[in-house]
Length: 162
Length: 162
DNA sequence: TATTGTTATACTCTATAACTATA
DNA sequence: TATAGTTATAGAGTATAACAATA
Image (cartoon, rainbow over all chains, first blue to last red):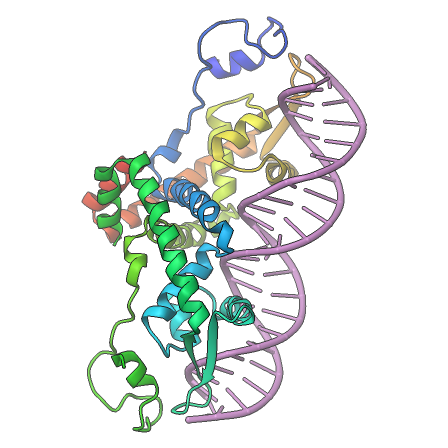
């Protein structure tokens, strides 16, 4: 019988939910999850996004919207298919994302004169201003990550993933 | 005018979608996304999960289900709240996850005799067998990641994130 | 009063398929 | 026939709030 199983089925009743034994609870074993990169990648992503979302909430920009504004801002005239492929978003999802950004007058869709099927994407003046504010907030968010992870670990992760 | 914008609005018509200039297309700039850990964490997570999902599809186990089976298997008698906190899943979401696993007779919910509010979770014999198969497939998936990333990079990521 | 498991709701995201217009 | 953008749909995941049973 494991220590954990013993704790659960203990014959000794607990009072007010406080363990009768003092000291910290036995840690919960992650077993083989410790060997799986996917598990930690997911935890890291959730943790980082929570701070990012909180930081950019006051200008109402989500992580996905941020990535769209940045890439359109740096690549004027991009098509939706190219943007979707670059960011790894579904084309179908990008449509609604752009609907909102266009509704807020941050992004503009112009028909391409070279190819009538394509939309050439570009930021509006308002979009450029919003992107500048978003970049400043995102930089503060990243600075917070560096403080929490330590500069060395942050650099190792970024260099390895890039 | 940027090279990208020139390409899009080029006065030279393209034939059959093939660029008139030979050579590779100009790369699309990621700009400040290159400095953001969150962007790469998301890309990594999506990339890893796609292979994981493909690998475990034939036994119908998702990443979330796998993590539940592993942690319950290694910590018999765990409560739902403890499991949710360990894996970073919402308690409300765990309910439906467990409904399905219980419906497939992989997991069992027993009322805790020490605390009537809690469910003591444990694997059924079928659940233990499914977990064994899932672990074998997951190990093959991880081996594939190591081949694609290189053992050194894989180890750096796992050590840094753990 | 607080906690555990549960239900319900709304929204986001992912994965597809099909449609249209253009090429 | 292929591609770009669009629409629609189903399922998964996330975020909340509220509730009953139990502590």
